[in-house]
Length: 405
Image (cartoon, rainbow, N blue to C red; front, side, top):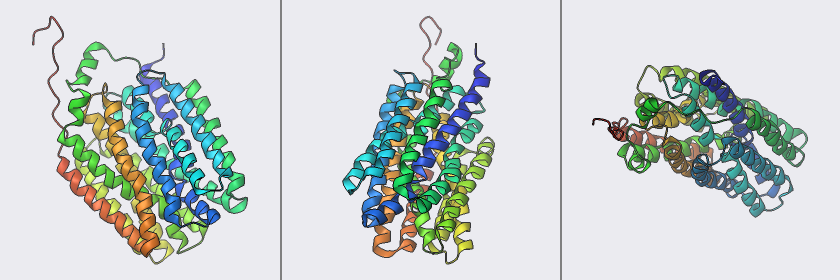
C-alpha cells in the first residue's frame, strides 16, 4: 500500500508541475497574448482584454462545478479532460481572424484551464495534508503558478517575436496536453480517507451553508475580489507597461522578475505563516502589493520599473496562496472544495475585470492612471479584509448515535 505521507509529497510535486504548465500557458501568458492580438487585429487593447475577462469569469463558474464533480469522478479524469479542452482551444486561436472567435475560444480555454489549476490543486493538497505541514505543502505546490511565468512567458515572447504568433500558438496548445495528460494518468489521485476520529475532528461541525454565510467568508471573499482584480490587472498589463520604457526583452525580464519575486516570497511565506497569524501576514502583503503597483505606475527608468515588479511579485506569491490556506484553516476538509470554489469564483470576478479595467483606463489616460487604479483597488481590498476579522470559531461536533453528548 502506498505510504500516504510520502505520496502526499508526490502530489505536491505533481501540482507544482501542473500549475507551472497551466499558469505559464494561461495566466501569465495573457499579457503577451493580448499585445499580439491587439496588434494583429488592429483593435483597442480594451476590446481584446475582454477575452481575458471572459476567460476568468467562465473559469470561476466552471470551478464551482468542478468542485462538485470531484465528489463524483476520479480527479485524474477531470484534469485530463480539462487539459485536452484547454490545449485544443488554445491551439485553435491561431486560426481566429475575428474578435468574436477569440472570445469564444477563450471561454473554452477558461473552462479547460480551471480543470487543471487552483481548485483542483489546492483541494488535493489540503486533502493529503490535514496537519501542520499544510502551509508548506501549499506554498510549494502553488509556487508552480509563478514558476510558469519564469519559464513559459519569456519563451513565448521570444517565439512570438522570432517566428510569429500563428506559428507558435499551436505548439503551446500541444504542450498543454502533452505535459499534463500523462501526469494526470500516472500520478494524480485523491487522498485516502481519514480515520473516523480524525475525520470528525476535521469536520468541526460546519456545514457548507453555514460556512458561506459567516461574516468571515463573505468579507474575505469580497476583499479578494478587489485584491485579485488589482493583482491580475497589474500582471496582465505589465509586459505592455514596460515596453513603453524599453524593448520586449526588458518587458519579458520584468515578468521574470515579478515571478521570481513571487517564487521567493511564497517559499518564505509558507514558513512565515507557520509562525505569525495569517490575517496579519495577509494585510502586510496587500500593503506591499500597493507599494509595487505604485512604483510601476510612476516608474521613469528600467531599474525603477524592475524594482516595482520585484516588490509586486513578492506580494503576488503570498496573496494568492493565503486565501486557500486561510479557508482551509477555518473550515473542514469535508466542505473545503466547495467553500474554496465559491470563494474562488467570487474572486475571479475581480480577476476577470482587472485586466479589462486597466485596459479601459490605459486607453483613456495611459498606464500611470491605469496602475493608480490598480493601487486603489488594492487599498480597498486591504480595508475589507481587515474588517473580516479572524477565523470563525468552529462549531461543536455532534456526538455519534450512542455516544454521550
